[in-house]
Length: 540
Ligand SMILES: Cc1ncc(C[n+]2csc(CCOP(=O)(O)OP(=O)(O)O)c2C)c(N)n1
Ligand SMILES: [Mg+2]
Image (cartoon, rainbow, N blue to C red; front, side):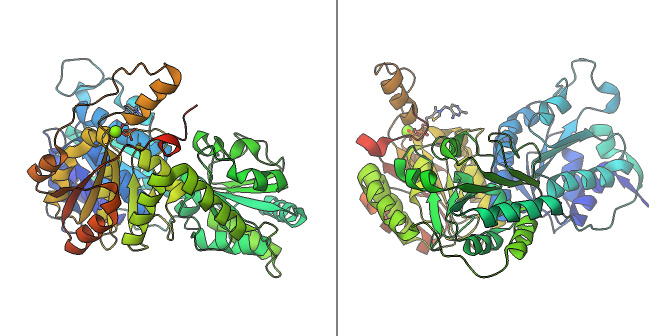
């Protein structure tokens, strides 16, 4: 026990939990939190330029590394600004520890005209969190942070919100720090695992559908091993793109995008093993709707198991632990794959050359120009939509596609978070002209943090996807979808980024140059392909 102010107790507990980064913006209502980390050199404070950026950075940080970052925000607008990023993280199962300032305890819930007042802030934050609470004394801070960590580390990872009123931040009380804890996730019910192993043995033509939960559970090796034992080809969701290397002979990539490519597989398969995926709208558009009747599903979230498809066996547990146990029960030697995966990949490539021509060339040039460990962070833009299908991915957590919450402006701040978490890996953000202006001010953050980062902006002077939607659904009556843009090169220069405009054919040379010289780069690419390359996967 020692006497501590609330702000210092937060800092001390974060240190125990191994938190290394705080994203946020100072104000009167979170200053004691910032003051708490002032003297602690193990925690780096990253000042962002809008709280949405803080939460999106924490999301990218978690997706790229599995590590948890904290955010400090003022109440009211600070929290509501952060909510969009927290909503993204919630939809993509990314953890983060958000600390919200708050008026002093006696001032709460009275609509007293207090500064930054927001009624029901816990309800507001709770809607995009797996854990949300308010502390009323510094004494409780270590315990509450521990609960939040357990919620994030032992269950499906989601943002956690801890509200610390001003009088608690600056008030002193006796605080006992908790010793570090090893967090563990449930290993799955042994009887269900045994039934699942029997089901898998009995299947003649199984395939595996792998989602982002595989990477979250650090289960990529277990996935590959199980696939080899079963002789099962592996299809991934857009969030599971790093779950298996595209160099693995059983990897079939991602099936989003209304291509008929996966029909053969789905027609022949007699069992799907779904791991770490809720088979959501994104994956469902093409693959999920035609799943075989026999499904074995493994997920850390009990609500996801059987949610969209009835399952023969459902297992709630950690993907790595469950797949290890399944593999042990299957034993024996690898089965021959029943499906011609190599032939499939050749057919898929030929189809994509036809369908995605200019986008495929561009993405292949990007891939060839940058090393395997490069982290690509997508936005909701044409090239971003295509990335999961067209970019060969070789390492876990190297393709970060925005969650189903679907905000524009995701990629730049999420890429900044990814770079801070993984400083040795090259990081590239992929934005459209529309998306970029949602969060472009975080270029200032990237500059202040002296990050090597490549921001690509694909410019068609439009909310292109929506303009196309208006073509399809409203007879070409374009309203609100044409944009008058700034000069992106001058914009980048104003932020101190090395800024160039290049034609799509020169993208490989441009990113290689940026990668070789280091620093912050903005590369604008005028890009508006016609025909089937202009396909948006969700378009009706
Ligand atoms: C916060 C938010 N507002 C609106 C939308 C709707 N929306 C989806 S895609 C899109 C167009 C994006 O334009 P741009 O970033 O230039 O990419 P493009 O479609 O032109 O490739 C819009 C407005 C959204 N996804 N998120
Ligand atoms: Mg655009």
